[in-house]
Amino acid sequence: MEIRGKVALVTGAGAGIGRESARRLAREGARVVAVDRDATAAAATCRLIEGEGGDATAVTADVTREHDLHAMFNAAVRAFGGLDILHGNAGSTTGLPPWPETPVSGWERTLAVDLWAVIRGAQLAIPLLREHGGGVIVNTASSAGLNGLASDPVYAAAKGGVVLFTRSLASLKEEAGVTVCCICPGAVDTDLVRQAADPEIRALAGRFPMLSPEEVAATVVTLIRDDNAAGKALRVGAGIEPYFV
Image (cartoon, rainbow, N blue to C red; front, side, top):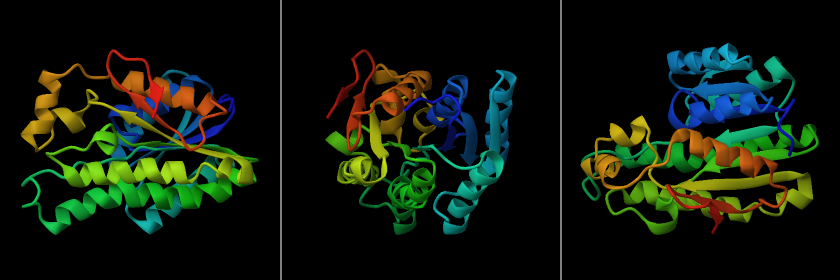
């Protein structure tokens, strides 16, 4: 899909991958709806985009809340007339204490943000994309969803669910003109990693080369433009060429 002139909504746009994805999409000519549960962070992303000559609006929303999901899509319609691109990016790790001592409230939140919100977000977005003649959904999964993660198995399970959800929607390309795909990054240099409660996740910052959020954002743009990406998961790692898995 050509990005220029399209309307793109990015969740988790207040920092990290989401912020850089929103900025990159704006540079490519999209009008951007920057969604984050932190209103200050969402507004800051919009200011960056506008300072670079782009067009953006900020929306405060918790993607685990039904009302907020409806509100963010309604905001896209009000501000820009519809929706063409959804980057379902908001994510959360489980934190401490580690599994199996993790309280139910801890891992329920991880499943809600990382999997439920992706599924429900896509379900609400697809009618809007159809109205615009089709569109693209790119969800942020993780290499943990392909290989597992001993220190946070619930996070890995949620991201693995995103991969299989994506593969299951491949037929939407033919049925509705909607491409659903996902990215599976390795460790990314974000606050989510550097400030994680789990010391094993924080250690990734010093033990392995990490991707920059800008590099991940570039792969999001690549997938949006790829007419053959429906149902596919793109593995992205530091120092390697991205490849479908």
